[in-house]
Length: 295
Length: 309
Image (cartoon, rainbow over all chains, first blue to last red; front, side, top):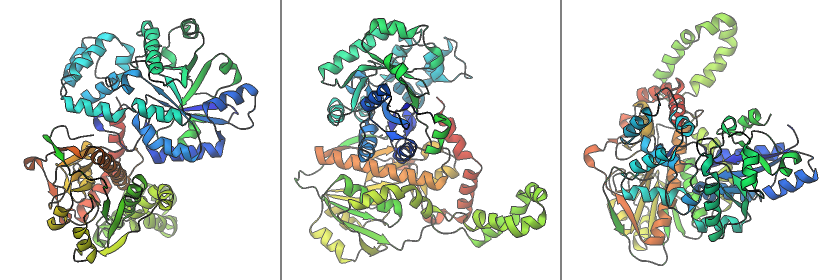
């Protein structure tokens, strides 16, 4: 394995994966513990700050690994944080202001929930008019043809779900502000993942990128969640679907910020000095799957 | 998650400063994990832990000799191409017995060993934080003096997982008696409910329920119900273990909520749409079918199918 700094990206660490809220990216705690053990054997676990420092200094006698969680899901605090504490490791977590404020569930979670109800047939009819066929995967079609109109239609259908169910989802899925502050006090990096988790690096939603990140930053600062405010974590980052010359366009909008992307590669001084960080998606099985990803 | 289709009310509990917990479990590894995990999450609140031992379970029993004999006979027919390739003698003296040992002698026997390997790492850590040792009682022996003691000085919470049905006289003494059931109530109550869900090929009924106890099996109002994370490599024992682990976590959520608010929303089970499975119904033939269903890849395919969004 190349001596580089690898940022491993997770979403949720949880024993639970409700049928109605299956958006993917969940890893159970025993798999997560197994992954950390594997990474310890292959290299060294470091925090984001330490990884940055050592890569820039060129102090890499073995591969370095850092852990990054997206979306601010509750399982991270409940299950992942105690496991990371055993390794004395501080991770990073990127959050969306709509989610941690418990204002509303993310559109993708709403869509996943609607799949388990009969409202989904209305959504299917709506998408068919936009060219969807049952041969296409629903989520990739929606992201490919993303628009505020689709999000509003999902919101309209989700609003028909009983209030007690909607409020349960909000209370139990995402970390609250106080829980995120607890992680921040432990030395975790709390990064900006945009307001509403739209695919802002793709053509369909690039016009929203500035507003999405600005609104989330303002809210994070108002709530005192500022430890990772300089890190912009792109939601729904699909490598082949980014707008042309995205790096320069984003740098013009956010000159001092660090761009966090999916790259399936390690980080070297070259890209760190450019303020671009690449992450590798964690496997969803046992650590033996890491061999395919890291080599 | 919650059972959204059921009607709900809010149940209030008495106000009390010290909310002690008594645990009632069986002695399987996942039930021991339950006891350790509750102690880890609620330091100094677990007053005692009653562990019922010597229970006979079809999960840990072998399948019958007749079923093993049927497999022994069918084994060469199913593996005919391999035998032809390797040669009959080699097959007979070497590999056959190796396969026989692994494939047949252990057929259906490895529930406990699956639990041990799944939970080993976690439990060695949790054992260090244990402050309450289990008090062992013979299966369903409610005449043991520990129950008299429980009724004279009742705890706030009685948390049960894997023990026998607790008599109403004991449940009435405790303000809040909660049970964890590895099954999707109200459609799957009673025994071996995960196996029944696999047998009936109802993937979305592989789940766990946490509910308030009454004297019936898994009959009280539901507090939480959800589905576990399942991986395509899981066999049906691991699906059961994942469900049991999730149930423990949901139980902890409920204990936290009731401790904080002294009330909780309860979802009432509709008897009309309930089904309680007895342990007699789970015969060796059913067990055999469940094992075959999983070996034929049904569980793996369903897990993969549900992951596609």
